[in-house]
Length: 237
Image (cartoon, rainbow, N blue to C red; front, side, top):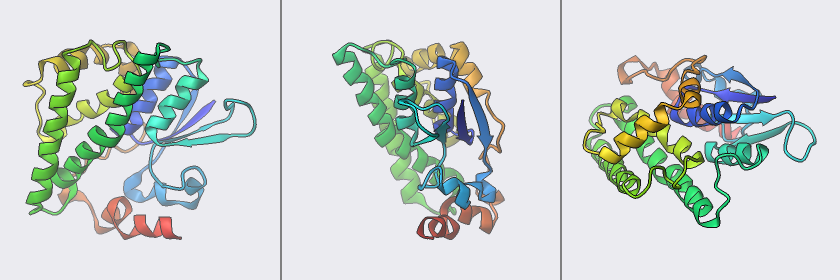
């Protein structure tokens, strides 16, 4: 059994999709980040970085006691290894492509789109530079993704953890005002991935508050829990 410390964000849905694809039994542990659940000492024992998602495997690879895995990309790789290499190609070239595009998502698509979400949806108004900087980078990365998907049906030729990592972030582009209409290759891929039964099940996992709040609805305490002093103090303590 795997415990999934979860919020229904793109990073959370990467993990729930992979678990549904592989059929590994899991138990969802929902967190309310607005209320600071992720800052509690008991969660730091799971993830010293206080971010979500994280998993605890009670039957880990290699045996032994419960084992925590943090960072969504690392979780996808771990779950692949736990299930005999599921959704990571064995061919060296395709395996490298899978890992390249997974790292592209982790280092580029996710952080840039995440910052766009922050400045557009949460930050105090008047942050014009931040909005422009990350909106432009989000659009640039969509163009990169569209070009790749014009060369292959999926990021690593066949469906893989790289697609599971990127798809939830593309699903969230509407929230920052970006349309997929100019990107025909992304549109075709997005529909194909989204029609997979495991993806449908994985993105229906909601048993936690959805962080859909916009800047007018965040209280000072909620802001601090997500972005401010409370978040800082939890790591320094």
